[in-house]
Image (tube, rainbow, N blue to C red; front, side, top):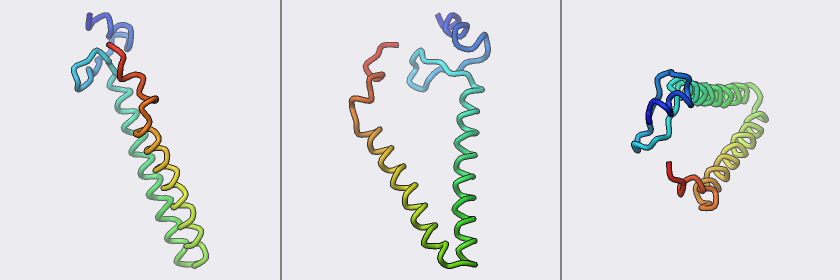
Length: 98
């Protein structure tokens, strides 16, 4: 059965079984791609914040703009995570049998 799932998902490439021991498989290249995108996103965000802060040292009015932009991004992320984690209607995959 494991061999059939590997053939369907990854064309014979090595597969990673979930930590829960389920049958959901994901190829290692997808896992590394997701990890790479997360790391690049974090580095890009940190770079943007550092750039806003550094530019505000030369022009103090930019500090107010930086605070507004960073506050808005934090608010959007907070609302997104709270909606996703707090809404049981979104978890329709939890009841599925693998």
